[in-house]
Image: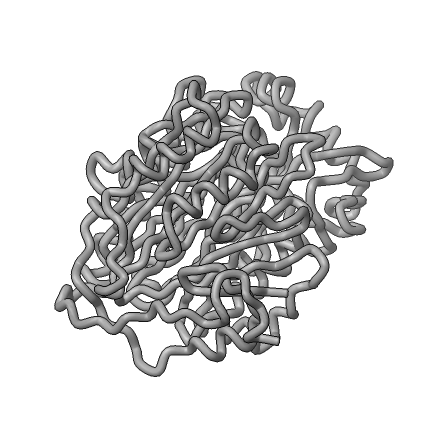
Length: 482
């Protein structure tokens, strides 16, 4: 079941809630928010867990929302693997500390980002919190998919109801690794008239721990669940994906495949092609060293993005690990089919840094040409990085964070929060400038996804209508919805 609510934790069937919450009027801009209403913090690793989360919730918010003015709070709590077994107690404590006027999404990561720091060591106990106050012109709806109920097909009108009639709605999604992530992304992409803007990540559970890893408003959900928040009104996302690998050798057409098994490339046994890449003249000495250190990877051209191999650029590939071999082919960490375009890749620190700087530059350039209203006012940024990035890739801390923070404003590292994910969710390239550019959402690997939360209202006249109504029978009450 998909469940939703604005502000508190009433969860109910998707069609009822979103049809009931469709706005009667187009929301206009309220008072122009400043970045001082948003801030991230990181916990004290020496403090006891419950004391640490209490202190984090007390010290991070710049101020709390004023519901009498139509304001609402939005918070993202990121919890490291070291605290996985305490996750449910931590999220309940955070919910009580932040109050019912704040929507809280939580997830377990391989590391956390906040307070101007990337804590990328999963053995270190850490939590980070990104907190902000949204204007009356902004709307929020949370949703959840449980492990026992499949999402509706992407053609279902239920997704249109979630999109609330918007051209390009925006969503943040956190998912357990056993959730039907691909089906959820396909549905969200179909929820807007011109696509959607989606960002998020897959959680990193601790091996052997059965505790939930995703939560809404202090309630954790079991393995196989996904949670998210949808934005409406004046607030939405701008999302940038930066790759962490570069291609080696030419692209190949997949001519025979079965699920995750690649059997033929260009009508030749796939293992034969792979051996040609590794043993032939395609790899430089540097490439061979990278393969020896990190293994050879493969990239599949993102479906729906590029029609042919001649038009696929380096950033258009979805990188997947090679996870096994079975003559005449090899298995990858994802499905493939006949007609796909495949190219082998290597993990490369220099290429990752260059792509990050290139994508951040492109995003700032597109924003500058979009006009003041379409560019939006940056409020804060979310960073979802692969667990293989951070210091393991770059050799020094905060490399991605320093560049992601540029999207949130000058000296804005304190306005960035996020986590190290077991899979990153976002577009190929850039999506969401001016809420006019919806892109297909993919599951990535070895990337950093930067999602800037922006206010696109633009006029600052303070006359926006609020959109924070509560549907359902109150906290956790499903009776009003049957």
